[in-house]
Image (cartoon, rainbow, N blue to C red; front, side, top):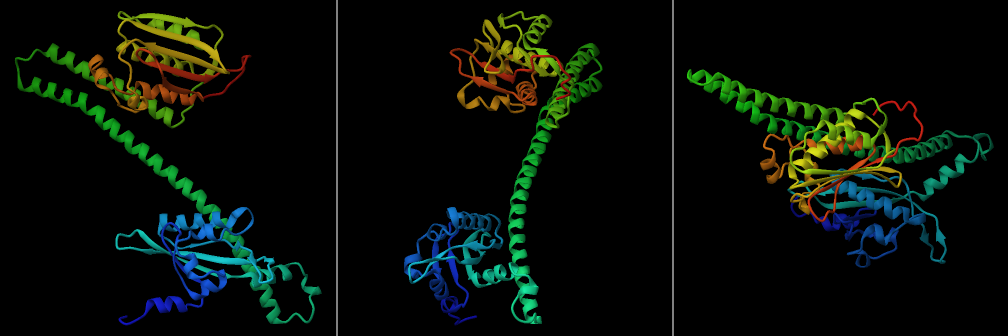
Length: 412
């Protein structure tokens, strides 16, 4: 290939062709492209192709061209665009309706990334006119004998029209598949995180059990009761982790739980009656008649987790409030502890996330409590967030209020 003048070959190509950078900026155009565009190479270089020739009503052509170039750069594959209308001004100053077939192809660099894009343009206005003319005229009424050549032209035109529609359908399908693939990648990432989370937190108590049993076998003087008590604590810790993981798995999988009309204030009262809070004082302000539709079991677990979290961090006081606001049942649980830094406000809802003060306050915690709470909130079409507070942390749950009269609600 030595001695071949590729610049001359490119310039002599009969098909209008341009070389673009990955952002769609003109780097080079050939003579055929100058002819169909009505613009010189000097005036095009440095301009963005989809801004220079916008095309079609409401700049539809610019939108389509930019989307095509982005697909080529992202996927490194040739992209053939659907038929594009772009009107051209005639020498008499009249805008003439024109149609174009465009193709964009990647030029890859040594690293596999797209370095350039070959932009090929071909005018098909005459062919579109032929399709329109023959499609609107029945075969029996066309002038002259229906020759084999005429039949072939009609078939060719109809095939072209069908191919154009097929291109548009393929584009829509391509975009739908892109969305499905993105969701599949997110789901795979969630599964990987779940496996990593499980192995991370199960390793501690399992290792503890192994060490205690090994010590019991190697030391005949060891007190079996002490070993069994320690092993029981490890087993209970494992049970707590497995229970939390199973609940998260059920929530993530959308496993339904029977739901009914639930008085949120009643759930809080039942939770407080079951607990023995020996440390911080509890100030509960519970508005009556704040009813939601949901699972009593899951809502009880949510409230218990929020109260337990506040109990671990509070210095002397916990405040619990239930009220109806703007069509939502609102539960607020606040404590007067050290609070949560701004940068950790979302991280505390991640699985197994435990700040240093939480580990000190409760070394046996799983780090899954708030993650489960948020999933339960989402399962009830609600939200759970950390809100601003002058002291300590304030967690706010919002769930849409339920219907005013009892009825069969199904499951969530």
